[in-house]
Every structure is written in structure tokens, then in C-alpha cells.
Length: 117
Image (cartoon, rainbow, N blue to C red; front, side, top):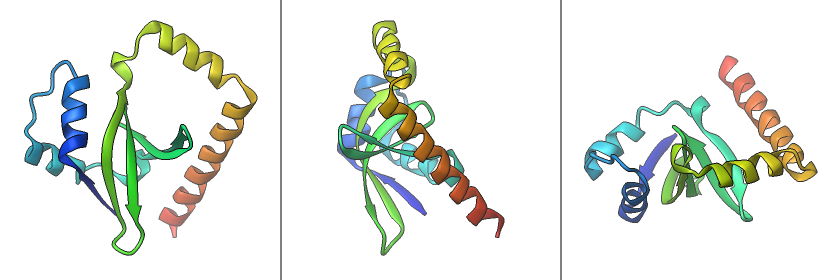
């Protein structure tokens, strides 16, 4: 699987990160080193998102080329305020969040079983 990032997504990441010192090409090269098992796929407001390295991204997937294109940075976990974190914890305890977490764990288990084969 190949991860690529759009210029827009990189710009959004740099806006949100207090210490973004990477250039676009270097950041793109670093994405190639992210292992598949570090990716956590979820839905964010009804659209596909992926989480890794403390960052949430909106993405588009091309099944034919097995490519994930990061199209925008949704947020960086270390820069989310405590108020938003409290809301996250509350939501996490909700029934819908539990169902989502269960499906994510199930997907991770499936991915791990494919890796062992």
C-alpha cells in the first residue's frame, strides 16, 4: 500500500502543527515508511478518515493501485484542547462510539490475521 499526500493536505498539516519544519517532498518520503499496522481507519462525519502518528486525515483510496491519498489534515491529537478532549471522552463512552471501536478492533484483527499468512 502506498500513502501519498496532496499539497493542500500538507499545508493544512503545517497550519495545525506548531513546529512543522518538513518540506513537502521530505514529508512525502516519510509517509512511505509508515507501516500498514499503524493506520487506523474510521469514519469522521460520515466520510472515510485515517489516524496515525497522532494525526487524523481525510483520504481517498484507489483500490486498483492500492494507494491512499491524504486529501486534508483534520487534526493533530497533541493540539486538541482539553475541552475537545473531554468531549471526545464523553463521545467515546457513547453507544455509537463503542460500536465504532468494536468494528475498528475487528478490522485490525482481520488485518493482523492476513499479515500472519
